[in-house]
Image (cartoon, rainbow, N blue to C red; front, side, top):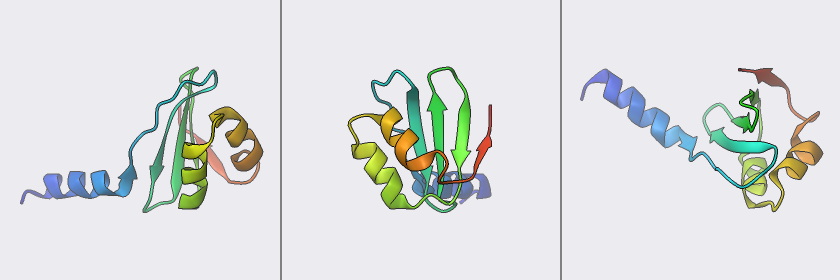
Length: 85
């Protein structure tokens, strides 16, 4: 195999699918299993990476009725983050 294809395959396996949803605040979110990073893309286009987020938190957010409410109550203020865009 070509190294670039292997890296792409590993990245594909590592990433939980982006989860789009009807939300007035959150456009979509993606979980990077290996790094435990939860990437939130807001409707405004701003992107934040929340660090060291347990997979259970990602799964709870995915299952929650209101993504914005879950984000405000369980993620903001609980995890370090980087503003990406």
